[in-house]
Length: 192
Ligand SMILES: [Zn+2]
Image (cartoon, rainbow, N blue to C red; front, side):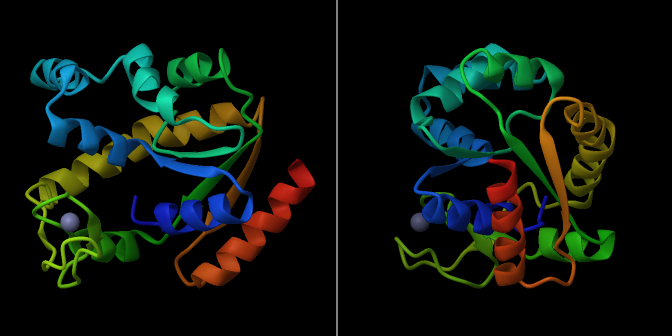
């Protein structure tokens, strides 16, 4: 989290003539609509259970293109297996940053009160022009929950990927976004 996934994802997608999909953004879009997928997600959330891989894939599937950069999905072995039934996963990029830096970025995040667009607090929504406000889940508890999710679920998942796909680890603590993009893109050219 807060390592520049969406900035890198959007720019990579543009350069590769592909599409960037943020699983978190797609989930938020459903929640705003309050559609049947949102109700299914809510049922699992109420029971304190993670969304099953099939439901997660149903959220992603309508947006898949020939070249797609996915963020936030898959983050577990069963999700990866579900994805690979339909797609060929060629590479994974593991963005990391210093803990203090991540914490600082996490608490600086805001959202548009209208469309839930995410950005840095005090900035404005590009579509609605209103000031971004603190998100209601920007709390120390939520931060700790996400750190635990990362350590207990995502780190082992990334380790398990090493058997099947090429994985690039990039530390974004001090590198600027242009350098990260150039580095990742030249690596991807080798992999492809
Ligand atoms: Zn907005």
